Amino acid sequence: MEIGHDIRAAFREQARACRELGSPFTSKLCDLFATRLQPGDPIADQLLQWRATKSASQPLIALRVAGALHGLVLEKRCVALTQVYPPAECSDELVWQGIADAMHTHATYILDRLTSAPQTNEVRRAAILVPGFLEIALCTGLPLSLSEIGASAGLNLLWDQFGYTLGDLSWGNLASPVQLAPVWHGSAVADQVVEVRERSGCDLNPIDVNRHEDRLRLLSYIWADQTDRFDRTSAAIDLAQRPRIRVEAADVLTWLPARLTRNWSGSAHVLYHTIVWQYFPEAVQRAALQMITQAGERTSASAPLAWLRFEADDVTPGAGLRLTLWPGGVEKQVARADFHGRWIDWRGW
Image (cartoon, rainbow, N blue to C red; front, side, top):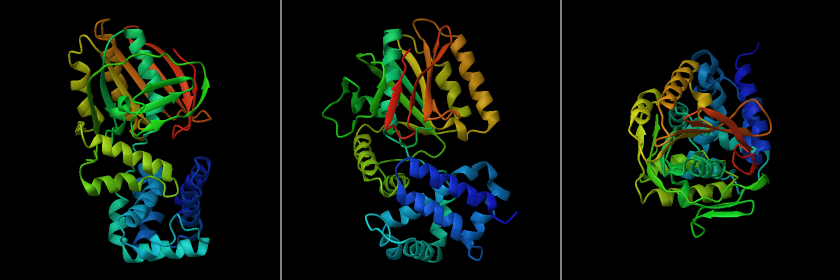
């Protein structure tokens, strides 16, 4: 087997995913890396040897590369690369020339960016979560206290400050600069007033949206030809700069115990996350699951626990939104949705 075979396959797989998710440019970029990357410079050698040293992170390598290159463009560091990025439409040859120039002149920057996992903080996933929050509020009749795992910049901790069109239902702040209107399938969602009593999140590397460099880093993981996602995320960042939401720098096993053992009497504690569970090692998944289940078994009707998660589940299309409610531990898949929230198939509780 040739050196880098697995990495080339990872780039090809990401190219396919980008095509399906509406980013032809990022698809082209990944295909170019799959076919044209050759050993001989620090970045190519690092990528082609990735499996030997960082196999657990291999599925993310194409997105790390895309984020690093887009970061160079947003920071106006590489003219040759900027000239072949959207809105320009260039041949494969010209795009690869721009990439090669960036890898040659900005190797230190790119290599540094490859050490960190992507953080997209996809705002449209809030539209997937909101029907779940409405169901929790309806079932419990209580205000919600929020705990988000893998919160990144905390944009989706502000879901109640966005506006939504969910089928026939308009909900939230319809004057918000962030308006979400996914294609809706399935049953109607409950129209429910929701009070958020408290909100907090954790992330291994939280992004501070009040720092210019962090803002650019977050935006760099938005695919360069998806201007609607870019503009929507920028608007959400502007919202997040005002309330100074709290995202703690902590791993899930360190952060969860205090959240799960806190006295939440008079509110429903909602633990939630989106497309993060797959990145935890199996041992961490097992330990977190045990913590959550044990906490659920200790709940009462005056302080229930809800676990709402939107995660890949090896079923197509999209990913599943699952909800578990304690006391009782009843669990249901309440929806399927596009990974980027373009459509939702709501099944309800």
